[in-house]
Length: 335
Image (tube, rainbow, N blue to C red; front, side, top):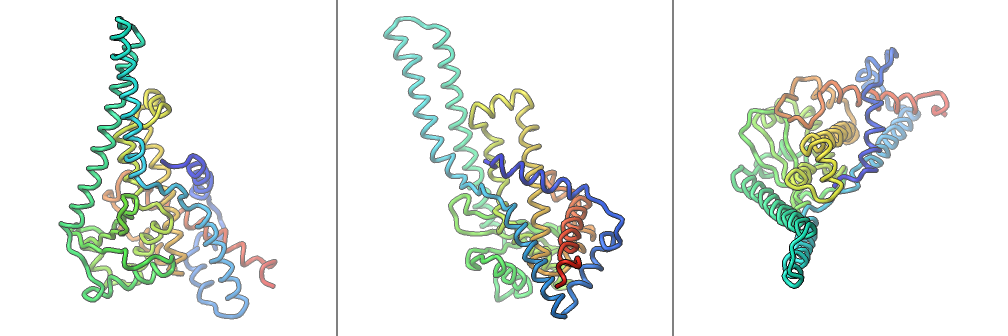
């Protein structure tokens, strides 16, 4: 459910930047270079900053996920199709065989296809049921943080949401007791529910008071996932993992192995989503605090196997910001 074009386009853009390196002091000390650039308020610098953020926003726009598929589509559309196809094969295999009075190899193939239909239908329905249970448990077993009681939690959320044009009423903030600094965000529109669920773990709740700017950068990263339509991609992965939908998937599963194939594909795409959200956090906050998050030891193994390392995320962010900053501060752009 990830378009091949989007998959390849992201891969060819992000991988060279992750591997980029330079001896330029402005690249090595990119944070100081950016802080100095962003602090200038003369007329030329203001024009350069406007162009800088315009270019970054255009890049961010180009690599957004264009295949934000509602996971109900394969469930509601494919399920009756597979049922009808299974009934048709049942007719050919049993009804027609009864008329002809024989059972041959084609009949055996028909039985295999019928079994495949049953497998697909069962896994589509059970997989979607699992996701609905997750949604229900998440909403019912977590403490909701209101705007009035937790203004320091909500202020960066509202600010970042304004930047991407997201309606505040659709965001639900939940407190999780995990002693962890990284929140999670899930856009439930993929399940037909107009809510965005943002979970705040214990350490992040403390950080919102101790270091509001750093907390704001982390929240901006999560809100950027919504803007990119990457939030909730794990639900698509879960359905894919439960059931290979077509003939191509069956063949590739036989060649490479189902879980190995899916993990490879989704890890690459999910890595690009993290790189892009780090860039989105910088665009939203217009400061370098996202580097403090990436370098501060906040990312642990709890982030999951589908996330890139902090080092590769820093490498990408340094490269893309260095290249774009160099582009707008060259003499040709100073006039």
